[in-house]
Length: 93
View 1 (cartoon, helix red, strand yellow):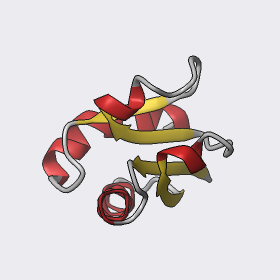
View 2 (view 1 turned 90 degrees about the vertical axis):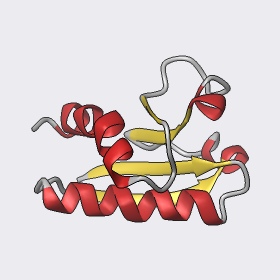
View 3 (view 1 turned 90 degrees about the horizontal axis):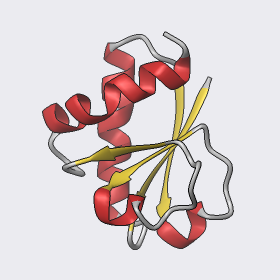
View 4 (view 1 turned 135 degrees about the horizontal axis):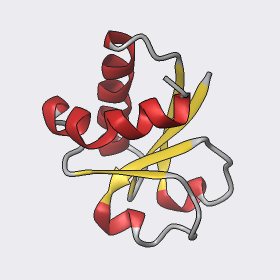
């Protein structure tokens, strides 16, 4: 099972909305995932298989961390366009 963390600045609303959309997208595509939402500072101490966040936060993450950059926290179509290929790659499907 692929461990994904969705990240926003405060880890409250935006990352939760993104988590729900990522879960929906993965379920629709038959990809088993465990998705957690959190704030930027907390993600630095975690070891997910993939982080999904917006560009402004992604560029602040440590080099080498697998990241999918999305244009929106809530627009499912944009999230799918931006992240599904990377999720498939990381899940090996």
